[in-house]
Image 1 (tube, rainbow, N blue to C red):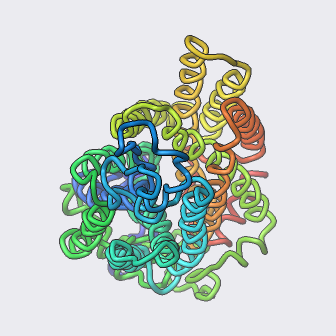
Image 2: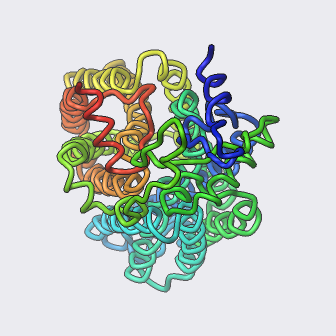
Length: 521
């Protein structure tokens, strides 16, 4: 007799149908509601579309802060030193080919001795992302919830982005980019967790990898948008900020809060309401004698667990402090932080290097975004076959070996093409790793502290993003060497993490600890 049949036949004691069979959300999805049906597909697409917004706010700097071409207006070769009049683009006869308003660089003269300000404002944005990831990671686990946090960050993104378009000077611009980063850095984090938590265990990995198509799609869309506004960086910020406000009004009202968050917050009726909605939309049903339980709540054959009192403060809320109190999660978090930082240095470093390719910027960004998609597809296909750990190791080592090979190639012509090929393979491998780490990290920690842990690893990723531009300016071969070492070291560190394939997605710290003890027996 199947497990589901046994469950369906249990719980019929002498209580006249009053006794409830208590199951976890994973079991409720797998046995009754459906792991990835029509409800999850609709919810997944709506929520994951927020990744497009993060792509717009993050990568707009490629076009808004680009250095346009300069031309000698005199045309007689008497323009003199370009740096001498670059700020005004007139003092020595030099002019910006597409006008001063085409980018922040041309408007405020961020060239020559002022060039460092371009990298500075980009670093400031990622610093804001790092701060915001920690703040909203905690708020998302606590009273705001996944949906509430996503709503707040999207509103802030739209407002700060619109204000950025009106920045009167460089320092106001830098301050507004810091504020935009504070909110933008948490969009993907909140979206990922909200999109994947209602998915059943056997489909969660493939669904999680599929969220990143939306980010790459957002970058591709940005290339097209930027091509429509090549002469105004301010208009570019307006157009890329409005979608965040539209998302809040037109999409979020049709999105449900995570049933896992409801359950952890001791709102079992709300959690069951969502699970029943999932079942109904999927053409399934939840038996009347079924109720939901956390993984730190006991249950027995006669339903005694339904009346068990559990310390709600230990389950309903959690913070990064709780992660460090447990030896199990502390070890996992430290490793995850280091691995995410190394992966981010390589991913953003190879992505930002597009400005040094000396090709059409719009086409280069489009091609790079499309080149990442096969990595997501391949990983999604192999994720449940080989597991999270082997894939993370393999993709990081692939990127590390490829970048190391690129550092050994010198010269121009065919050698430059070979180095470019190494970079393409490197970003292919690290794009797969970078996004796989979201799934892997989410499964390493229980619901009560999941977003707090993801917020911490996201902060590490943002620190890597801050370091990446500093690595890129070191020349042609040195960055490849550093990217290679980062990939190799990160790959070996993954060996120390446990596999999470087909393992329970725990709700509480106590449930995780108990599960680990059971596995060790």
